[in-house]
Amino acid sequence: MTAEFLHKRSVPEVKAEPFYLPSGNEVDIFAQCHAQNLAVMLKGPTGCGKTRLVEHMAWRLGRPLITIPCHDDLAASDLIGRFLIRHDGTQWYDGPLTQAVREGAICYLDEIVEARQDTIVVLHALTDHRRILPIDKTGETVKAATGFQLVVSYNPGYQRMLKDLKPSTRQRFVAMDLDFPSARHELTIIREESGADYSTAHALVSLAHRIRALKDRGLAEVPSTRLLIATALLVEKGIPIREACYAGLISPLSDDESLVGAMRDLVDATFV
Image (tube, rainbow, N blue to C red; front, side, top):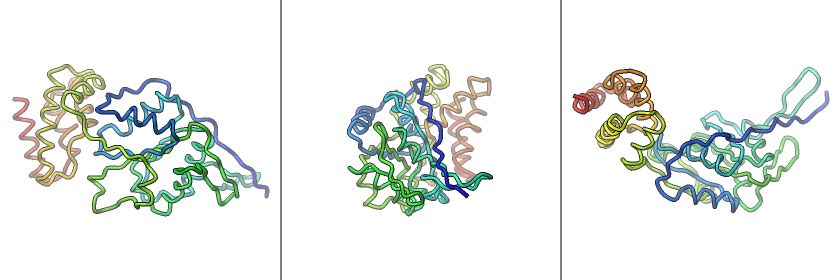
């Protein structure tokens, strides 16, 4: 049985510009990190625009983008690759990280703290001056191609006291703290993404700010900009606004009857 090596086809670039409205200087910092071969860590609540920022920057920088959702079962081989047995022999298949390293793509690991620590360690040699990826199973050391950048993200509010990155890993990244956009920016984003009129978008943003005030009263996750866009899309397609809020904004946040009831009361008070 012979061993052959198979590298995946090229990753397409992000062709159309993903809409992103900066709330600070995150675009400039990201671009400079890319120019200086620095890895980036994005921290912020669920649905605040971390993934959209990465997509926008891949388009802006003209780089292919490979996104990897992290989870408890993510093994190093899932990132690097593995040998697979075929009818005509054994072939090596590059994992998504290896593919990004070879092709100079942006590799985005979403919710990095969900991955096992022994998996995260394989990133270390890519986040310093070496910019290499050793592949133990083949004996190959892959040098990162020009344009390669490692980007990771996580939600520190959700992960606090549960999981965290080791200091030896955290200090290999330039970190940016993101949050929900201001009310004015959030209104603009909702209108751009959903086509909603001003009054609908304004009412949804006002409602979201009132619900976010419940965070210290037992609400684990507050409504994200993503949920507001989804709700606005339902309204634009003819769903009555209260029903759209119940389904698109309230129900995804909690199963606790008292919390759901309180949030429904806020919806009813907003849309009399």
